[in-house]
Image 1 (cartoon, rainbow, N blue to C red):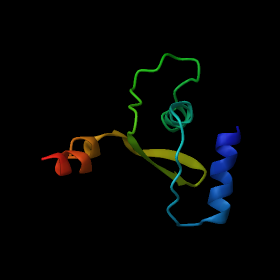
Image 2 (tube, rainbow, N blue to C red):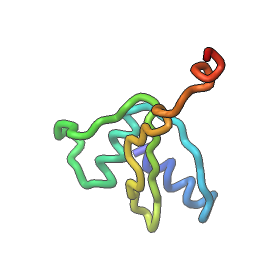
Image 3 (cartoon, one colour):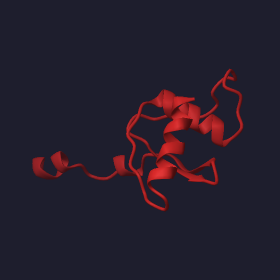
Amino acid sequence: SRILNFFFLLDQLNESHTVLCITHGGVLDLLYRIANNKPINSPREWSIPNTGVNLFNYISKKIFVEKWAEISHLEQNSFFEKISN
């Protein structure tokens, strides 16, 4: 419930603003379950990749998944690859 309370607080403080949150997979898993009406005790059937980008919308006290497990930023040449060549 503290995760949902956090969203409620953000909604009250930041109407129509973008907020960046950095968290771990457990919170992401719970948000995905809430947004998709998945039981908390059901097996997870979706991946949560390390450094993946996930985008949620919170509208009218409901959470929506806009982007899930986006990892395309990892496929680009890194800074270190560029300077080593």
